[in-house]
Image (tube, rainbow, N blue to C red; front, side):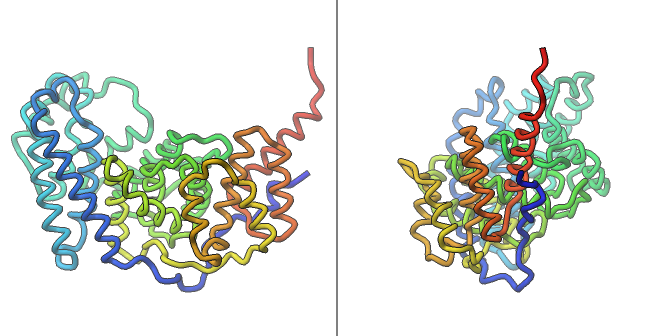
Length: 401
């Protein structure tokens, strides 16, 4: 039987990191997102009157987060981004504070924080509106303002809005203990919604990287799990989800792993998708703006994981499919040393595909091969070995009437 402890979880090397993405390249992604956001706001303007029935909560929230990330950058260091961010903020204010949005606050106080999300973020970013805020206060004072069931990461978002730029923001740490970041991610069965819940909670509890939270478990363990989770998001060609998961590295002030750095390059390469997906564009723009704040930038190159060539080719062979997902096409075109450097991504993708197919023989073969050559394991390796142990244990339990 394979022990779950047989596979040490990979950690970033202690040596100085290789060259990271330069500021101008990250800035270009931010500018692209700001331009697409401005165009989206222009398209929304003619339909403002219909917001009473269906306000565009999601796109306004995506744009507001992008504006927040840009306007909290050092304006002297990035003057062009600051100017363009202010332009988008003004356009966002016209839409987010339209009369129909104000009426929505009165009609649906239970949704007031979501309706006023962009307004609150704009206020905290230096673009207040006292009249609209008074309407929000009246809505929040209604007895029904707290009605309805919400998921823990959604309640954390509302708490973040309430405490934004408040000295009591440390109270978010306690709320985060009730979200998905406080427990291990089930990498064998997690779906996109599960992964989004983790990424979403991290946005709020870190205030987009402006504060370091006191998490219920080690940030390193969470990042190792997210490194494995990227395989699922990449295999699904989910550009927005990959970008949202990648935000964990800069908001937790962590060195980017080779897998995360490759995933960032893949998101950047998906320009046709981002041109038609505001969510994906804003996710990449927000990620890039947050990465500009400090030294926590994705790597351009990385050292090889020194995995043996036969093992690498075995892992790659397990992923042959028609058609190949776009991340594999991009990886196949990369230099050989960089391909070897993300061997753990191949391993996680192959393991998750085998688990999804209930191919426990394939799972066992992969784990045995990795252990035999002494290669570094992943968080998914540990969970997959535990899955096999549970299945083996079930086989020993006699059937009952």
